[in-house]
Image (tube, rainbow, N blue to C red; front, side):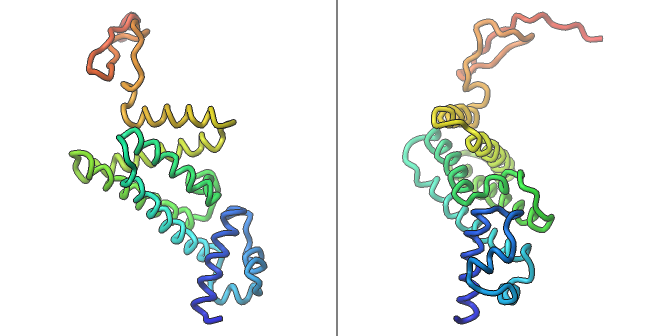
Amino acid sequence: MPRAQRRAQLLELATRVFGEKGYQRTSMDDIAHTAGVTKPVLYQHFTSKETLYAEVLDIIAERMMSEVQTVREVEGGSVERVRFGLELFYRFVSLQNAVRLFTGSEPVPATVQERVTQVLDSLSIELASLLMVTREISDARARILGRSILAAAQSTAVMLHAASGEPEREEILEVMTSAMLHGLTGFAPLEHPQVAGTVLAADGSSRTGDAPVTAQP
């Protein structure tokens, strides 16, 4: 097999093995065995597990970016797009068995973590570009929002992964979609909030709290 073709084959197989077992539990022996080659042959193409995994991350990143582009094609309103995006991120990292990696739960070498961070930064920039084609927002602010949206998507993925069943997953998606779109105003204030001051409602009105104001020392 030509060298370039063999290298591509090894990368594809490594992507599958890393996905099944995670970074920590995968060895170069595992990948060589799956590919049907000796470990010296594997090392002719990749000098270490870290360098191999960095290239695997590039493959995952390319696929992830392609998936994010599909958010633009979602018909419906903002609710549908946000919910679709949250599900998309979770589904992707689940199918790639990369929930722990992309939510910072799997210990990896600094070089690997740096590459993961680069992938997530690129993803947040892509999310920012989606915001800018739907909202009047500056590039700088869109990038800030892109990072915060990605952080929320990571947290949502962790919760969805730990959910006991479909009803709990539906509730998580409903709550997080509303929170990302409307913030706390997406949840109606109590008629008599137990706080000092006021509580803002989605329509711009507010409710006055019943809690006494604590004297400042």
